[in-house]
Image 1 (cartoon, one colour):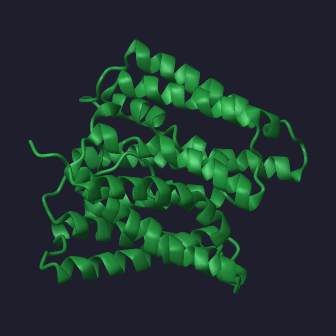
Image 2 (tube, rainbow, N blue to C red):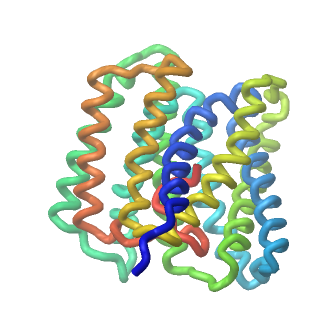
Length: 312
């Protein structure tokens, strides 16, 4: 077997860096667009561009028979998953959001077990859940003890992140059981469009247009999320998976939160202290235990390609 091309490792580094920066980009984007409209604009534009790329490559978009399943996946993975992160980052630091989202394997483990063909929960997985939960408590408890308005919003932000994890877990389980053989790019474009349209509709229903602001930094962050987070990161991820082992590519799930925490501290003055470092280490240890003792080690599919965490 020939050695992987050097470009595959470059692509993996790009995934780690790009998706690690999108949590801060989301927070900055909220300076210009409220959460639901942010998701709507981001995923609709990315979906249209990806559909155009699909057609330019001579590939067909999925037929109507696949639209229902792909739309459901888009609503769960992007509408709830990414939408929950957008809403939470109004009140929760971007680095902390990234660490909490990294616990998606915990939710995947529980959701998949509810299905008749779901795999059993091992002792390692249970231990990982306990360890990871302890790390999250250490991470958020000091802020949850606040009783002022900001503390209350912070608590709801944590709830929103849990809903995001749950949406991603349910969407992943649904995707696992409703696969389609259509184009990878085309299937993903449909999912992006479905999730984006749903979020745009929510934003319009909530009257979020009145909260749109012409904030240069925020608008630049929105463009970055579309070009880098949704398209550049996705292409790099697909390329890395094509040439490198899944186990190696999956390290991005551990690197992303580290980058997000450091960037949040440097750019947005978010908290970063020894407690944060210790809590992150505990959470990652729990994730490693869950991955080692369950089906989480198996590649997950987002449409027709593998993906192991919330779309950035």
